[in-house]
Image 1 (cartoon, chains in turn cyan, yellow):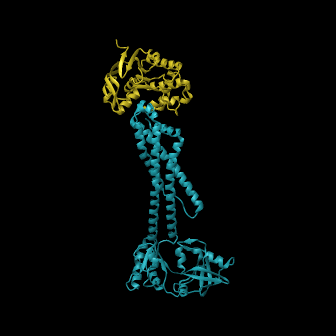
Image 2 (cartoon, one colour; image 1 turned 180 degrees about the horizontal axis):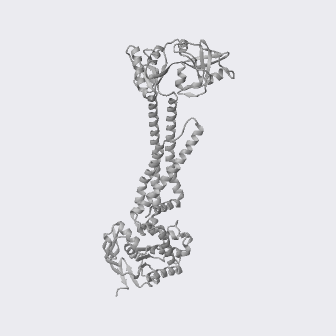
Image 3 (cartoon, one colour; image 1 turned 90 degrees about the horizontal axis):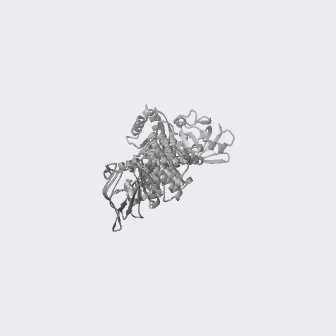
Length: 402
Length: 225
């Protein structure tokens, strides 16, 4: 029997029972669509998180006070008991490392800012002009703490977009005075609106020189030091160097944690990659269920088509040809169902994008390919039993319709 | 062409053994026209199934064209059914979703014959049974007699040497039945060996040779003198 004829006969048999065919098609399609959509969700989450970290800047290493054994962002690194503060002197020492291009010390705290009768709680960020370069932030107007050195206090501040709008409405805030905590600062610039970045709403921050922030909070400790290595190749060396320099300054005690952006990225990438794969696994169960449904419906089909099978045998069909015909039907169903399922899946993804425009719902190509292969494999596997049953039919009984 | 030696076919029904065929010996030369008659349960259909290689004897030897069929495997049996034997059934057994031409093509599809050749051969076979104009009709658009003629065209399209007809007129009125028998006789005239199972003595009587069966035994053979 020629392949084309086999396909035509199998296809014709499927068309003759449209309700049955539609049901089996739908089962497979739902399974494949489930894989596509669920892996799209996982991928969207992974992409969202890794993009967030990438937006921190390139070739970053982050020095935090406190010792943590794990790399990546664990709760221990933030809350860990800090034996010794990270100080501006540490930052200056790090600046001499040949592997570090630039760095910015960071102090973070909550503070209220007020102007006239308006008052607002904001996140205060104490840092240096280098910070803007590392984070690749852009100014809407003015300058980012101009000419402020590492250890220089200055009554200057930079406003996030929302803070600026709330406190100054339509007036230009440049050069105007503002009360920040118990100090008065002049606005040197306003940031472009940029939305959230790893949990911090950048539009809601007020930035002052690091020393000013230390004075405000009355604490010499730094929240962290963000440093940029001299290129990708220098990241590891910069990390080792930073650890060596600080340890030497802290009397041989390694009481800091140095993490690289790459390590954080890799951690999240790994977590979300596993999540996506787990979702794919769960969704594939529905493909197996679809396979079982195909098997059951095809078993019914075989019993309804015994006389046709008997006729084919009388006309000289071999066992193998009968099996081939029924398997082709099963594979057709699974393959076509998979195609419909992919279309469904992408449609649902497109719908999700309408509701969550920030996320990028796209299934990974391995999931699409895997879903199709699993569907066809399930169809084939579960098609074997009905096909064999058809081939085993006694032609005489089959022709008699018994 | 056909040689049966002491062929038996036993069925076990419950704890009873039914002898559907009981030591039947028979020779049918090529080109013969044979009717097989007998009451229901006499074994005539069983004989036809065994001759058509759809069933195997429990004992005895069946030689088709000199070949002992008990040595054939599934593939060889299918091949022999395909090339040497044509079947005509009482209830036609046409595939409802295929038109007349496609139904006739079916055995050639299974044999892997290329489409062009299939088409011309099917048209030829339909012409032989006088149905050229109905080639694109579905079975449900054809009368009973026409359906049986499609079935005959399908049976002869592989150019077999043996045509087995199981009550070919059983579902037809006498006029169409007569036409079907006429076609079978015409094919026999062209050299095809024709075996017709029937319980209609008028139809059975037209055959050159008549076999009478009862209780699985060959009761009477008009060809043996």
